Image 1 (spheres, rainbow, N blue to C red):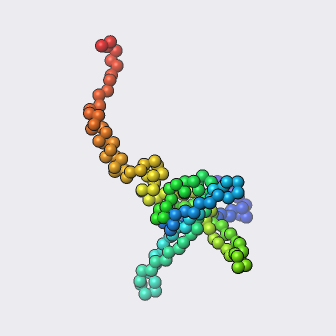
Image 2 (image 1 turned 180 degrees about the horizontal axis):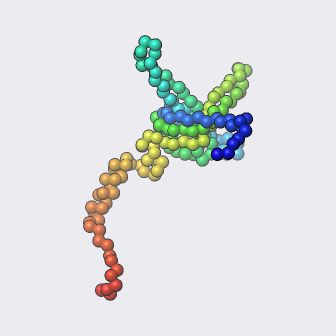
Image 3 (image 1 turned 90 degrees about the vertical axis):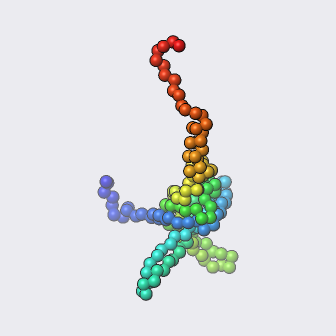
Length: 156
């Protein structure tokens, strides 16, 4: 491991596992760049001072660009469970009423689909894995026993 000067050791990394709240919003910007934005919910559970279990849901805005936006547009839907890695960013703008607004968002660097159904679609399967396996077994039974031809050097 290389020794780095302390002032160069900054890190901005966010890792989330949660469920998508709505279908992603996909837009095209100047230069035909595609951007997809979606919200992901994470839950925290804790015991309050009375010993009662409490749950807090936090909502995070995730933005992805280009090829990752293509993947999100095709595969991610409301309810999809995702693992998202990215960087925390802040955007500031002035709204129509003149009020300055700030939004914290995650600039997504990588996304992994965790729910089985969506992950199978990403792999090119449209049916549940058990149905695919059953079809493969049925095909083997239809074709009968498999007989290999062996070349033993005999000309007949």
